[in-house]
Length: 236
Image 1 (spheres, helix red, strand yellow):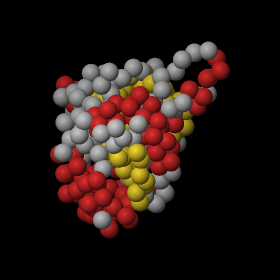
Image 2 (cartoon, rainbow, N blue to C red):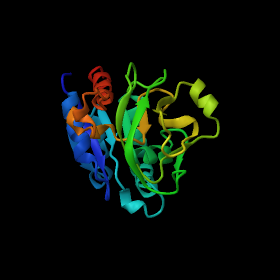
Image 3 (tube, one colour):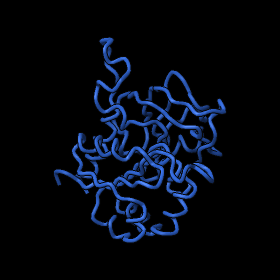
């Protein structure tokens, strides 16, 4: 399969679906933006895809907590289809609000709380990928991309066990912007095919998107993360 189909799931209030679609195209996938209402009306849409991206933004304006309403809709409407998608080994990634959704649906461990600073943060960060089970971050060199969230502090009751299980996929390097435990920026499920992260790698897929692009220094592209996902999907 030369160009796997990637569903980019969007909900009312999300705003990164076009950014993710662009990143997926550059990585070699064929993205298709699907509204949550479409998926709920026809869960079989998932069956024709090889990848799933839960896009970032502010679903339902975060009215009842970040990602809460979106996760409820998914769990009750297409929970079995999502579980089947993951069981088939197809790669899934949730970014920012999408990460919050995946933890609330139970597809990923832990949860996201308010930033330690107590306010919304938008800045660039550096990420490193420790050895883990994640197919998305295998062999990944450090990358740089922005964060834009108010509830991005990752918490888990047993971070040591999570690390030992190979489920800590990404850590903040140099600075821990939101106070996440053990500087965790992203985690994967036990199989390694589901990844969630708070930063936005889709917003650094071209060198010119970096604020220091003219200073002669190379900065790791977030594109490489999507390329890893596409590489895995091609083998499905």
